[in-house]
Length: 233
Image (spheres, one colour):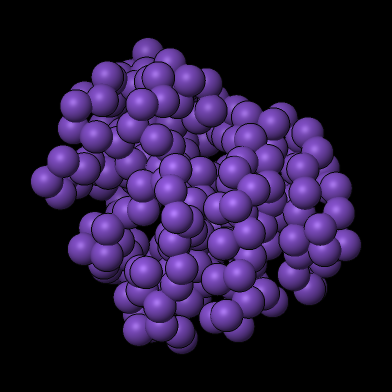
C-alpha cells in the first residue's frame, strides 16, 4: 500500500499493482509535491501521468487541487488498480484512466478508457482516441516515470511526442535512476531543475514556447529552446 501525502484526501491509502511497477516512494513524492506546491504548479493544473502504475502521482495532484488528471497505463491490471484507487478516493470526477501504451496514447491511438464526468465525459470502459483527451490549452503538468530499463532514446521519443500537447508554460517531471543513460531533450523542452533522492533523480523540464527563456519560477532555464540536443546528465 501507498498513501496520498496531502490535500483533500491526504492520509488515505491506495493500492499498488502486485508486480511489474516501481511506485515512486512516499518520501520522493512528498519532496516533489512540496516543491510543485511552492511554485504554484498544482492548483487548477491539467495533469498527465504517463506510466501511471498505481496512479499515485496523478492522484496526489488531484488531491492537491488539480482541475483534472489523465492516467495512462499499458498494463491491464495496473490500469484496473488506477481506476479502483480513483473510485476509493472519490476522485472519479477529476481523474480518467486510459489503458494504452504511452506512445499509442500520445499518437492519438485508441485505448480502453474509464472516464469521469464533466471535462472527461466518456463511455466507461469504451475505446477513445487518446489525443482527443488533451484538455483545452494542453496539459500544464506531466509526469513520466518509465521503468528504469526503458532505453533513454525511447524516453526521448516519448518526450518529443508529448511536446505538442503541452500548455505554453507546462512543466514535465521525468523520474530516472541515477544510473540511467542520458536523455537527449527534444526541441521545446529545457532542463530547469534536478532533484536527487538516493538512487532516484527527478528532472524538472520547462516547456519553452518560441521566444521563451525562463522557467516557471522566473529563473533562467538551463540550455536553449533552439537546441534539440540538450542532454540530461
